[in-house]
Structures are given as structure tokens and as C-alpha cells.
Image (tube, rainbow, N blue to C red; front, side):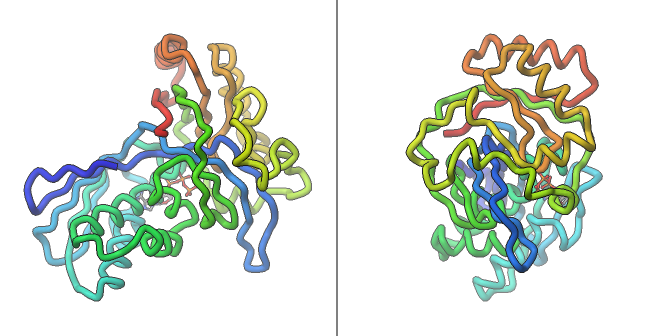
Length: 289
Ligand code: ATP
């Protein structure tokens, strides 16, 4: 991920969203965390983060009203952990321009945290390895280590075991977000592990041996929960298929739904149609390979 420095005391960092192309819930640990097998990739929908190093304390501001501007903000927590591990009491002013829907299943908060860790590591002369940054990230959230890597990956465990996935083809993505916020914790609370079905499509141990095929493999076990609460999900998936998507799926714990398009013309036309004919937020992006 490229970090641009306009002046020595300021950095501007793009912080990408992710989608889950496959998400099988494989079990539940004794500590209550669910285990997964998920294929994730970053997409070209970005929050913009600016860092100001000309300050003595850590602070955060965000353009979105539902994002906290205190020490609970994930970007702020990332800076706090970084300086603690570094053994220095430093300051940084973090400003976030939100474009990624909040609570949308697109990992915006986790991405912000990873972007701050990567940028601080660069600023302070790379004191930590990728592995160390991933460990810091995991203490903030299960998806943060993935954003440290930033490449298509299969995540297992609670999201902390990552293996790069090299068989993804370039695709255009159309995203539909109904402007509602879904709590990930609530979705997992309502999940019935007996109703999960994605592992039947791909066994996690075999994942790296197959070419991901949108028509065949798109699957998300968390849809069983959200679809029953939000009929929007199935409607949005169907409209993407009707507009020419090769496949459609809900990302993460939702509610954002995406469609995969091989053909950029079809994706552009579908984007234009949905932007004019629905009240939902519509985004067009590409998979980052
Ligand atoms: P997840 O599945 O990891 O919960 P998500 O994409 O569904 O991800 P996020 O946009 O990351 O959801 O936001 C989840 C919650 O985290 C929100 O309630 C939000 O207030 C809080 N949060 C804390 N810091 C941030 C941040 N920097 N950006 C977005 N949300 C943040």
C-alpha cells in the first residue's frame, strides 16, 4: 500500500475495504470465539487517513457520525499499542475521511487500524516485522492481521492464521449497502452452527489447490442469520445477478452485498442503473490482487 508524505510531519494513507468471497464458520471455541475459513481480498474502495506528527498526544477525528472520536476508535487504539510496544510516549493526530460504510461487513475499522500500524512502522524506521504488526493487530480485531498483509488470503482460526491465495482473477465489484449498520456480535450470537453449509462447497484444507469460481464457490454462512432479519439481502443479490453479475454474496456479517463482474462495461451499466433507481448506497470497485 503506498503511503504519500506531503510534508515531513504529515502522512496521507489510503485504507481499503475488504470483501469475503467465501466464509465458512467451522466451529466455536471454549472462549466463545467462532472459528472460520474465509477467503478475503481488499477492494479499491478507500477511507482516507491523514496523520499529523506535529502533536504531543494521540487524538482522532472522523467524518462519520457513528465512528467514535475517542480512545475506543480502532485507529487510535492501534497508535496506542504501537507506541507502547515501541516504548515511547509519542503523539499523532489521526483524521479519518470515511467512505467505507460503517458496520457494513467491509472491515473499515480494522483496515483503519492496520493502516495506522503500517504507517507508524514506516515513520519510525520499520522497528517491527510484519509478523509483529499482525500480532499487535490481532489484539484489536480478528480482521486486522489480514489488512496488514493486504493481499488475497485464506484466513483460518479466528482470522489470525493467514495463507496467501494466488488464484484470484481480476474482477469488478459492485456493492449495495442499504445504509443500515449490523452488529457483527449480534449476527454470531444468532448463528445456528447446524445450519452452516459452506464447508460442503470447499474443504478449507483444499482451498489453495482450487481456482476460485464465482458461479460455484461464493458462499457465506452468516447469510443464514442476516437474510432472516433483512429481506433486503436476497433482493439485492438477485438484482445484481439480473444486471449481469457472475455471482453475488453478502460480505462478512453484512449487510453490504456485492456482485462480481468480469466485464467492466456490464459493471458500469449496472452501477449507473442502480445509482439512479435505488435509495441504497452503490459503489463500484476492483479487487486488489
Ligand atoms: P467488523 O465485521 O469487523 O465489525 P464492519 O465493517 O462490519 O467490521 P466497521 O465499519 O469496522 O464494521 O465498524 C464496526 C464498529 O466499530 C462500529 O460500531 C464503529 O463505531 C466502531 N469503530 C471503531 N473505530 C472505527 C473506525 N476507525 N472506523 C469504523 N468504525 C470504527
